[in-house]
Length: 372
Image (cartoon, rainbow, N blue to C red; front, side):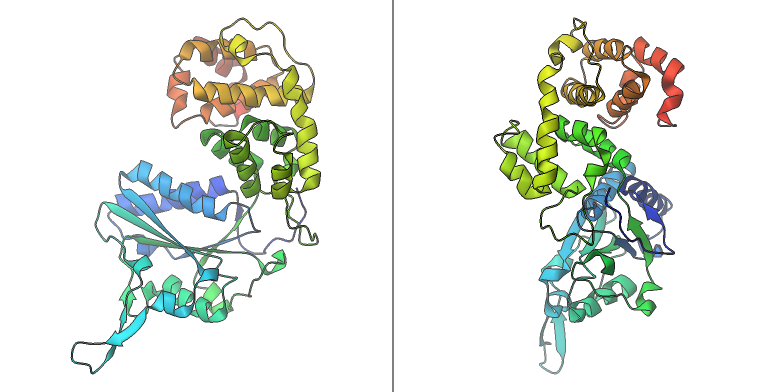
């Protein structure tokens, strides 16, 4: 992955770790009947495309799942706003003696107990300083002009670091001291768990497992407009899933997202899929051949994961695939079974109904690093 400067004196976490810690903390407050406003506003730092926006959406999903409440994300891209958009429009009061501020529509939130609001102030470090001043009032005082945010509102801000060569202003120390800071770091393992669950195309999964440094190609010294990042690889997946999975046919579209170099390497690697066993044969228990090369095995694991995801409720087919995987080198069978565990929430319970999976756990489960 591209070398880059990191912020000092604040924790660096993957998207997965950040989701787990923040969703867990907010969830504890909610279950204990406390207001989420007891947590300070959070500031997520990181380079463009690292997954800051995705992190907030995952926190909302986790809170819905763990609390039974409805989570509503209000995404405010501050770079596109001016101060009046945040503060509201001034108008006269009833007797025409004072000015009052009309609340902006974006802050018209449901205060009821069965709702959790997440106000996401994106690109806060890139916004004009006049807009930042209004946004800082939200993060610090939980008010917008004369209007107070409801007690069920979580405030999370995000921005690029000044080292990222994006438009970014240095945050005043007095403000920084009032926020909880987290730097989002790139983690292939955490991204892959999310990607399997959300159906990212198997070619993208396989390639990035084979070439992990390709996940993030951002560097502050580079001048390229198109570069690889978790965000752009998700876009590549969308093209392969929705437009065409013929890499040659959509090569220029892929190159427009991740750059010509990364796209060319991805296209060359994707040829290994032509030599893989048929997925239908593997999951029917009829496949007898196993690829030998590492690139083919990475491709095989991602292809099997995608097929298993589409047939997750057919435990006989899943069983056949686990029997087949028992003949893989251990490192690859571990990647495959980790992926299977990410197919859906609590999929482990279904897998535990398969004797071959239980036996695999008994012999190689320690290699899963506590995921069970």
